[in-house]
Structures are given as C-alpha cells and as structure tokens.
Length: 359
Image 1 (cartoon, helix red, strand yellow):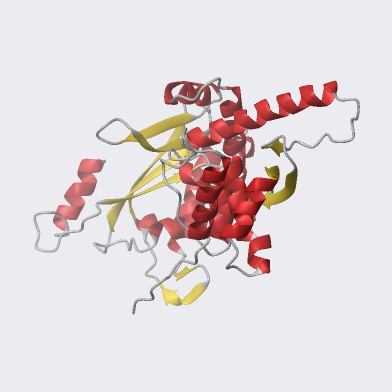
Image 2 (cartoon, rainbow, N blue to C red):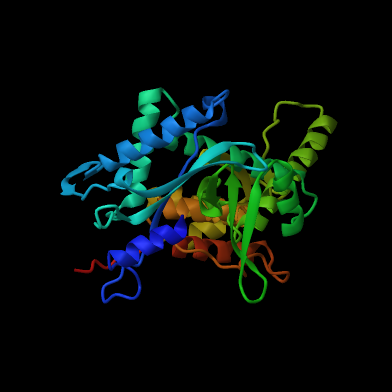
C-alpha cells in the first residue's frame, strides 16, 4: 500500500524527483479511546469510529478560538489511507492508527497546517457527541496519577538511583525513557501511560520531578519523614503534650517561629534569636513590609534547607534564578555565616527580573 502511495505521488509530480517535492509524504493519526469506552466493540464499531474521525477532520476549516484563521480542509476521505487496529502489549488498550497519503486522489495536497491541533479538535467533537471524557480532562487525570505514583516511589526508595526509579515505574505499568548526555548524565525523561507520553517537566509542583530536582525532592521527602520521627519521639518523652507541630527547630536558644505557605505546602520553621538579628541587619535597608514578606521568608526557607520552596517563592514574587548546584552550607560555616549567606542569596533571588521587550 505504501508503494502505491509513493507511485501516486510520482504520477502527480509531487515526489522527491520533482523541483517542488512535498516534504511530508503522509499524515499519521492515532485514535485511542479509554478502554472502558470500547468494551465489547466489534470491528464494525472500530470502522465506524475511523470513518467518523476522518469525516469530522475533513470538515474542520478554522482554528479553535481563532475564527479569522481560515484553513484549507483536508480530503482524507478521498485519499489513499490505511486504518489498523492495534492493542498495546502492556496496557491492553486497543486503538486505531491511520496513515493517509499526503496527495489525494485528485492530485491535490492535503493541507498539514495545524494538523495536530485539528486532530485534537476532531477527537473532542467525537468525545462530546458520544459522551466520552474529553482528551484534556483525561490528560490532566493521567498527569495527576503519574505524579502521585512518582512521589510514592521516591518515598519508598532508601536511596535514589535511576535504575531503581525506572524499575519501580515499570512495575506500576509505565514505560519510561531516559535522555542522557555524552557523559551518561540523565537530562530528561518521559513516561508513557497507555498511548500517551508525558515529559517530566509537567509532573509535580514546581517541576520537582525533573532530573535536575528529583534527587533534592527525594532528600526532602525523607528529611521530612526523619524530622517527623524525631519530633514524635521528643513529644512522647515530654510531659506537656501541647506542642505537636512538625517544626524544624534550629537551635536550643530562644527562637522565632515562622509559618510559611508555598505552593499549597506548609513549612513551620523556628530560627534562633541570633539568626533573626542577622536577618534584621541584612534587611535593614528594606521597608518593613518587604522584610516581613517574601525576602525574609525566602531567607528563612534557605536557612532551614528548603531550597525548592525558597526558589519557588522567589519566582512567584517576581524574582528568578536558582542558587545553583553548589549551593548549601559549607562545613566551615557557623550559624552566623550561614545566615548571612542565606540573607544575601534571598535578596538576589527576589530581585525582579529585567525583561527586555523586542520588536
């Protein structure tokens, strides 16, 4: 069938041997309803779905939300095309593959502008007509489920390594593909659920599951568990049970409590009186409102070791950037030096980004 498609393109003078050849030989689509939506289907049902998709797609001549952007409709119904029914080996989800000749039977080129956007719109029209879950809703549900599974895997790992992480994801039915540089360092990864592929940058709040942040995320999860265990033991040994907050206590001396909310998470931190004095001195040139809001809170989070929360808060306040991979408390730093470094880093992180507007 593919040879016949290429022969047709040659006859229509659209192949690579002609002065103005087409660069895309075929249009490819995948139609994948949820498994429960196609239970008990016959081949006629699948054929009807393929015919319906092609008919709806050929009728789309406008972009969604942009009625002034007119498109040349495709003519796949009057083109050479192949439809195959395939069942995924892992998930068992059946789905259709459609491959259509870029040149229709009349010798005209099927327009490929915004073809992916058009295919999604056609699928949503069919979903709405049949009462199926819309693709965007299903996508959000999948991302939420994958994110929750990734965090549960990180919590279950005694130490982080990519091999174990991939194996545990595979055990949950996911396919994971790592992207590495020339030094075999993981720079990115994608997870496949059913017939959809999602990049790591969309998982978790503040992209906490990206390769550049995932080890710190693992450490933060286990640090929280360890801190909670220590506090639970201390609470059990105390005669007064009035204070059961999960609080990071950074000194035996008088402290100042800070309750900070970042991206829906609550951080309870007590800083020593000496550290508060350092922050007051470093932030002396700032107005009282700034000292009591983002800059001070970022400094407190940095001092307590909540790096991801600190960078997220600075970004939400108009700042940006990151302390970098080498950030952390040096072995020679006492609390005063560490507090000074955190205060100055907080001011740098919260400094508004200058954005140049180009013509």
